Image (cartoon, helix red, strand yellow):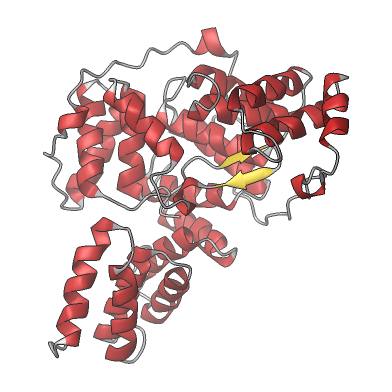
Length: 395
């Protein structure tokens, strides 16, 4: 995953914003908050575009929002800008829409929670998950709902599982008119009874501002409630919030602990997040070998972002000698899964004979795939290379 943005799962339904043709809802919500001067939102938005966290990588957008956050005193934004500068990116960009004064984050951890560290951890770090168990199937399957009147009766009588299910029905508009406000009401009832699905679902609604006003502290509160009961998606989203300082002071070290727990509970996105932390040395000691191990684990589970980052590390020989064949193979897998940046890189590898024989015909195919993507950071270069091949420009 060139990233690890919010994993959105409401009740038993999971979806990711990057799968949508338009800008993901959580990115749009962050943009609105950042435009209103929310420094933490500006930082998270900048990180999303810098790392490609379920949106196309865009250095210009990244630098613009990170500068807005840095102007408000966000230390994480300054660090990210320094990393971009090391990579040769233009970090002087200022976005007109990000010109509003940025509010400094107000640490109020005590007001919100007694503590954010997961149980069973210490300041000495955490053990990386070795294997990922298969997630348990959710007993509530929306497709199996045949009698909404019975579900409503059970929910009204106080059945937490039915309350979550009814919240899902209202959120998605399944057989009735969609009503996110009503969904929040039912999720709240379930969450107040200690139901993990209800707590997570309610957190997502506060996180994205669906059916209620966006409220990072409430989102953090309910993610934490679900995370303390071992819910992987909640652990992952909690890690994201703590890493970027949404609703609490930013703390990459504590975020890493939650990512590790989420990964152990089967969240592949958390493997990518851990890889990025170890690769950049954020909250943990920089460790290319651990970063590569996390990326490899995620890639082997089918995550295109992990496969792409693993390919880049193998191509560059980070932590060892370059491995062109393996770099090309993982890049190919990410390209086949639709990652535009991987399609561009794989096309270039085929064009240059990096890790496999020169193949202009296959190179043209992958470059044209990349040129037809919605990743604007990739499209222009891919189109130029594809056109060059089409006109006999060669390598």
